[in-house]
Image (cartoon, rainbow, N blue to C red; front, top):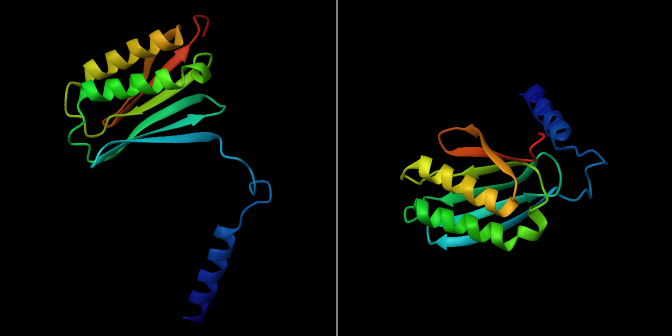
Length: 141
C-alpha cells in the first residue's frame, strides 16, 4: 500500500509538471461561440498560424439544427471574419455531428461558400462520420 501511494504521488508530480517554456505562452487560437438554440452551441477555433485555418464545431444535441441553418451559420462566420481569413491557406475542419440531413449537400455547399469567400481553390480533404476537412490552397499547391 505504501509503495502504491509513493508511486501515485511521483506519477502525479511528473505528469503535472509544466515546462518553463509553456508557462505564459499565448494560445495559438481564438475561440468564438454562438448559441444557436437551448440545446446547441456553435463554436469556432480560429488558429493564428500553422496548417489549420479554423475549426467549426457543434456542442450539444443540436436537434433543431438542419443543413440549411448550418450553412447559414457557416456563411455568417466567414462573412464576419473575412478580412482575417481571406489570405490564409490551409485546412478547415467542420463538425456536423447531429445533422441528419444529406451530408453531401452540406459538403458541396460549404465548399462553394468557402471558394466564394477565399477566392481560391477549395477541395474536400478528409471525411469521417461526424466531420470533414477541406483544403484551401492556391493553384500551385
